[in-house]
Amino acid sequence: MFTPIGFFAPTGGGGGIVTANLEQWLDVTQGSEAASLVDQSGNGRNATNNGLSYDGTNKWWYVSSNSDWTKHIASNYGLANYGGSYNWTLECWVNVTTIVGGSNSLMHNRSSTYSNNFVSVGPNTSYYGETVVVDSSANEASTNTAESIQNAWVLLTATNNGSTNTMKIFINGVEKGSISTSGIVNVDRAENLSLYGKFLRNTRYIQDAKFGSYRIYSAAHTATEALQNFNAEKSHYGL
Image (cartoon, rainbow, N blue to C red; front, side, top):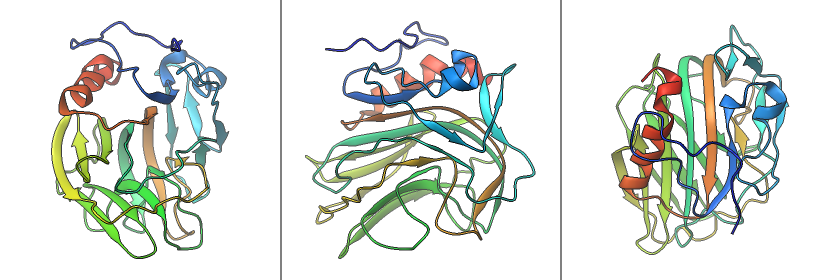
């Protein structure tokens, strides 16, 4: 049983951060770029910054007037499989202003060459709503919401429950969409997750945005747990 080294105290009500099955935690509130890349879960899975700026006053990452699709944080970690029979939760705080090319991905293991067996969480092509996709060589499942995430801080939470074959998307701890992932069992790309950018190809990138804390779990969070994490950190983002 490990003890995460980040904060536990509630800030805004609802208890502290859920720590059960927590695999990696990048906490922007640690106060410096280097500290924000240190895994607060206690598992020693530190990340690497590739071109993002860190605001030492407000304590978050950002890009401004960006024209480079390769800017991202390399998580240096990923689960073995994101398919329908596996359990996971991906979540991060984001405040997106502009996306070039109509879409991007905020958490993904998709390389510059389009291929199958990936997981992707990010704004879709027609609006700044949120989309979660798992894709294998034979099947794809995706769920989305038309609710805008543009120009506001939101906590995006994507979950996959292998017992019920259900993938869900939450915004600020509230469920916005779900879909069956039955048959999606082989989303096992070996690449680690990229965060906040480096999506697919040089025609799609985040031009202006702010980015907060990120976590990955080897369990599917319930609605109660998604809301608990939102409440624990919302005051840092002015909510």
